[in-house]
Image (cartoon, rainbow, N blue to C red; front, side, top):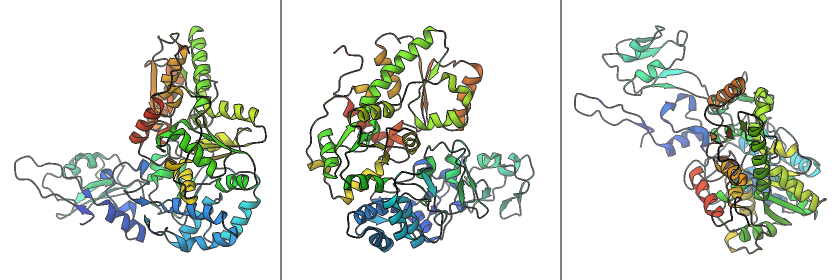
Length: 530
């Protein structure tokens, strides 16, 4: 099948709008061998690139393969030496994966070791030794891989080969800047005159005009990504809120988190008491019982694995009390404070809304504080769906390290653990239903309402289900006017669907939402008297 296939015109007086049908398997094959660049494609008809990995059923990312091999090398006899051999072992035998050049594989391994992979010449054995000697995790928590970056040429309006050279020329009629011309056989756009208003794109009945995008740049809500002189992506960390959208948007795996997996494995090897703190959204991506998960973590050497929903109960109760007090004192509205990316946004970009943000701590804050009191010398590892929690964890003295869901998936694979066959104990504390649903959009609001026990019946909850430029503008408007016409309690989730849709997760959002709700359903409610 060709990559772009156009259905034949239908017969009749009304012509349908023909959209290109994209064969993604062929498309990604051309991505990998360099024959096709993202900037050459009619992207308005490619599905939203904000969550492009995993890329197709049965396919695995090279990042996952690199993590698995790094973990296996750590468990081997000579870690630095075995790390140097990994590039020749990727992709994993028996797995379908899109091929990457060796320099990209080396850069992926470097990021899996926790380092910024910004050099063409990467000495992997040396980095492995540095990882062994590292005593604290480093920031920022993500890195670009210049050797993997496609240098996407975004922001241009182009006429594609789908142009039918129709008689009425609606594209020319729609242009107010005289930038579109036809030579009788083909329409072209003068880039010097084009203002990128996209009027021609909307006017074309054949979908033959496309606006190219730079996926990572287009999904960044705070304009933290731009291109360096070579055209490759670069991140301005003074703007970056660590939402992680760029990681999942890039189809070249050219932006990666800097893993802390070696730091955790060292602590386990050294006999320290390592406790995994499982985010409420965890259960949306690992469909197992709590007993099976606790057993699996203990098989890997963890002392225990506990759910952060315990901390979510505290957050919900305290935030309900705070909201009631604020409204009683005349406040017009309050926003939630549990989303780390939103908290970063407030600090870096919209400080004017800070007086309206809840001062209640996040579920991780309360859970880590509780466990630090119970186990003062333990290594507390938060298991996170997103990148922003890396920054929150780094700023919290009670949090030792952060791992993400895809890294836990790699750990299970590298340790050859069949989670379904693992046995463990039930949690000593059964967290409330609403606390377990904290990671689903609307879950924070539901927990606050339940914890209010009738005191918040007059509260109208307003969801911001995903942070983008429109949502940020909306928040700025509330801060400027001092009120929110839609309601008085704004729940802000950076990721559409909630934390279950975080950039470092492994399942589709809708599936993860269902699994979290199924896991939470049998639990008691925060509103119960018992």
